[in-house]
Length: 405
Ligand code: NAP
Ligand code: MG
Image (cartoon, rainbow, N blue to C red; front, side, top):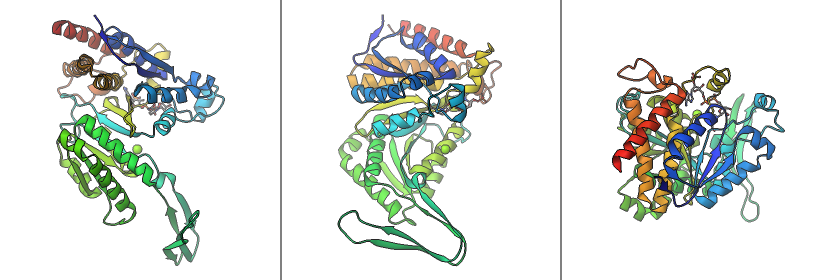
């Protein structure tokens, strides 16, 4: 007996080792249990090249239509990949393309497993990070200053108003300057995406900035965030969650001392740096999930790691691999649970929760891939190979579902 899923999920296939895992997950953990219409887009490197990357745009449009997508990791080509795959050109990052079409914000969430201990002892629940992925130093203009002179910020209005000039510094000798910007529209959509995500995860929102020093720039972020929170006050209250604004320094020290279980909304640079700190603090890249949320409530789920190229080349040589599939499985369960929630089909949500529980129990029982074995406590004697892990999960999932019905 399979469970009927009312509406489709957009499935995006990918590259290398994760493409191999993807097939197994779908074949062994999803298809046998769910009757689901998957709108399939092959974002593998070759097909992106063959379609002049049209397939990525089509996939993003499909997510807009069906609201939910699940994506396998994909190669972002560099010069070496252009050669390796004989590409027509160095295609852009598919994630970047999808993000700009959906106007989304990326949230990362670690998977918590009892015998895999975070380096930070206080952390018991996931710390989710939402990174504003537009502007600031990532779209800056910089200038080396060779000698004495005046550096200024000048704004020239396109139509009405006066030209404005602000002194940056009177240089007495060599130095450096930088100009950066952000837009109200982008900050608002970031704030809305954070609110949507926190409502969907039922966690508090923390937002930190340095508004004591940067009264206008960081103050602008603080004010816009507060306005969007105010607009969503009813939903926030009925979800029983809270919004806290704090100085970024305070946020950092509070996060380290906390038990976790909050969404930490970060400005672009803070999110870039802090997401790596949080990921390594929680243990392994193979346990980090990622979801792109758009301000109008579209969701795209994936693992935070890449295509695990090194393992793929071992696999091609015929050598056994031990690649962690947990984050990829959770990409599927994230998408399926959200589908069930939007469709009001609790049995679909229950299936996703059951699969997640089985994965966690499997690792807790000592069956895990090599990356986790290295950090497991109590220690385990041997690690599972890529397929072995998925097979054990499939077997236990079947047993659990049979015992429930
Ligand atoms: P990666 O695929 O994340 O892997 C880096 C290393 O981290 C691996 O070699 C492995 O270490 C470890 N690792 C990552 N995920 C693992 C897993 N599931 N199980 C076990 N170990 C895991 O990063 P990369 O090798 O730098 O990038 C490879 C390709 O992925 C690139 O073409 C890049 O463009 C792409 N990429 C895609 C995405 C995405 O689609 N979202 C994100 C990042 C990168 P050991 O080798 O020590 O075992
Ligand atoms: Mg980073």
